[in-house]
Image (cartoon, rainbow, N blue to C red; front, side):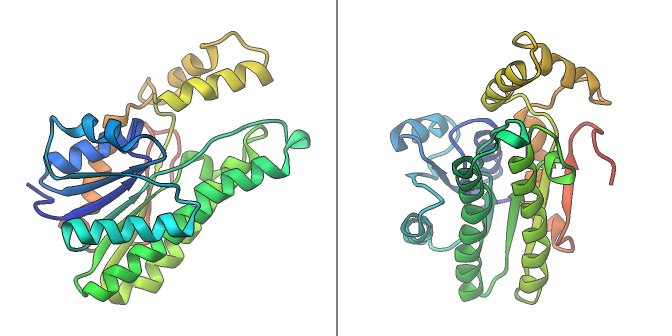
Length: 257
């Protein structure tokens, strides 16, 4: 088991990529704290068939007291923190002339502020422990470029890449590796919402945009949450001890860098 007895925090863990990574970490022997804004009991039941070493927490990463509670409860239950998989995020899209202050505030609060300050809180604990650690921040191919209808989301994911690089340099001397993953189009429940928004703003029938983006991927299909778990496991493991400040594309060939 590549993560035997390691302690991992995973945000946005109730579904999609977060849920898939939590399952993979548990299968590899980790103790996992699954965090989401959804019901704790429901989250815990999702992983009961995999491992008993799960702590489910209902928390909002935009709230300072919730971030402090995530760290405190993790240490209380499992004794420390070795891995952070920073995955919680929101999506929205609209023409740039229609963008609003409230959408901007909401997306940056979760995708950037919550990501950064949870990373900071976990890193402080890792420094206190003195045994290093692994931080993995979820960006997106949207963070590599602008998109006419997705300005705020693209900007938040570009910020994730930038903060990943800065944190990696700042924490290198503490043996804390900070890396990112940039998925492409992934078939999660969120993509049904994305497809509906494209249908609205591009005057398409429902389902057409989702089909088209899958066909345009060089490997010929949308990704699945399971496609992300290999990179998430690798970056959390000792195999990635000499890798930091990188954001790895897991996108079927959509973006080359």
